[in-house]
Amino acid sequence: DNSTDEASFNIQWSTDGSTWSPLTTVDADVTTYRDASLTEGTRRYYRVQATNTYGDSHYSSVSSARTLPTAPTNLVLTSINGPEAVLTWQDNSAIESNYYVETRVDGSWIQQSFAGDSTTGTIEREFKPSTNYSFRVRAYAGWPNYLSSNYSNVVDVSTSAWPETPSGLTATAISDTQIDLTWTDNSTDEASFNIQWSTDGSTWSPLTTVDADVTTYRDASLTEGTRRYYRVQATNTYGDSHYSSVSSARTLPTAPTNLVLTSINGPEAVLTWQDNSAIESNYYVETRVDGSWIQQSFAGDSTTGTIEREFKPSTNYSFRVRAYAGWPNYLSSNYSNVVDVSTSAWPETPSGLTATAISDTQIDLTWTDNSTDEASFNIQWSTDGSTWSPLTTVDADVTTY
Image 1 (cartoon, rainbow, N blue to C red):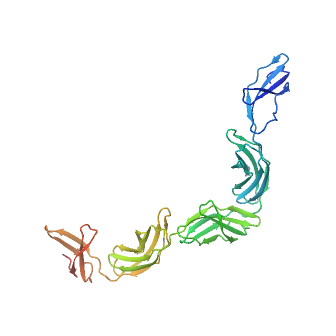
Image 2: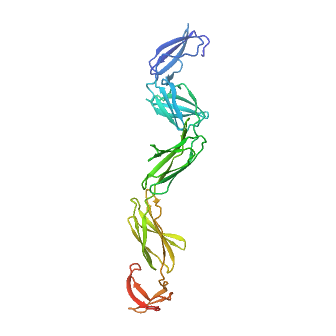
Image 3: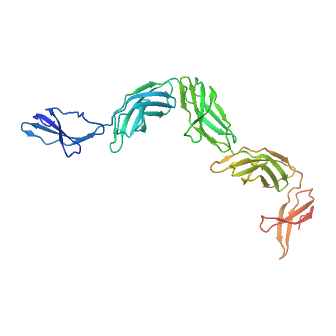
């Protein structure tokens, strides 16, 4: 009020800020007015004019506002336990685009959005036992309004003494059919643990229930290369805890079996095995040499492998094989049976072979004889150092050709 001599104030309203109509007149010195004749989402423009017996002032600047969405009412908490709280409310608005349900946690309000036509909402978060929580809801109208209603009634609750949430869940694949689960029991009063499984970490199904104080479980009903997600929940007569963190594992390829050493001599060992996997990309055949395992890869559809390396006479060797599944699994199976062998007393390997061209038609060979019990020497030749053919056989103790 910028005047000391007004007799009254004329208030006008408009739907567009251009065409104006009288709203009411208030007494001198009055500086407030409540327009209470509107409906939700209504835009109104206003201007005020002072007047006395000498005439009317100019109009004030224009101000506008839009009424809020109609607030929801009758908020009710229908259930609450460790992983979720379920609430219902009365939807009273025709213009809302969504509802914000808010939970007071440790003194702060945290909101979660639900569709505008909702009259119920499930708050998925960890609710601790024997703890105070509060809930409220309000409507929100998006474009072109961008308005929030007033809040509903507040619902307060003190949760029951359900168990503490298990932690540290770990899933470990131990074979092509089995995944082992372990977790930490953080409660002293659980009655049991509920275990759930999922193929995608989103949609969950019950797997089993185990007794109080149990912290391990083996899921033994799977097939090779199966991905499983798991979560665990403690429960007692007061309710259910929140779910543990999620852990997942993929079962291993089915291991090969019946590994057999069919032959072994100085330059190679030949093995066969049973291929039992449908997802392997290759096989790793491993040889234990001087206490260390050395691997060699073979194609995934192989059932035989030739290990080309120097095998010494009168020496112990071991062999094993496992399947490997590449992208997108990157999994190795358990090992096959181990085959142990002690090689026969064949001769020691010759060394120091030297080939010397001595003419346009002749190449001389010399080598060192490292054995005392050879019967002869086999000489082979190649055009590329890769593909070999027999050349000749010379007698024991001969070291030239």
